[in-house]
Image (cartoon, rainbow, N blue to C red; front, side):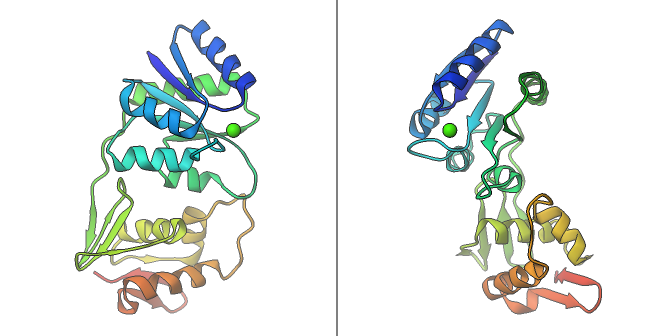
Length: 218
Ligand code: CA
């Protein structure tokens, strides 16, 4: 099994490399975002351990680009929780698993082995509801064939709703699934983002069901 470690902190990178080599993996290290992207595109790896904060290109952007090019290398993301990013963002952008620094090496190894057992993820299917389409892999949304630009959070919200067309989804359910529970979220966050989304996909498509929640019209 061949692994790619993309990490700019050289001590952590070499500790990971030594530890993983001792487990029998072949391990290459890249120290910048662009070098990591290049290696991931061409290297024939079985999985990648990817730091978020990297010079040149963030880990999020790296994995987003990789998925947009239809590379399905399993990705385990590493990040210090710095408030700016959270786990939901990591998984939204196409990573397969996420570990917060500082992490235990034993846990890293277990997660990595689980990822390798699962193998490369299947390309997710494109969702379609009426004239809306959402491509989770390319992170692309279209309305009547015209592209709609969404933020990460708007995309995650629409993704959740498009997997449940015609169903009433409560505000609590949306908060639980679209927002990271560990981050303080404004009580009106759902209303605010539903409002943003309505402006972009058409007001009539996202109905308010009084006292119950929201429903994506089919
Ligand atoms: Ca870093």
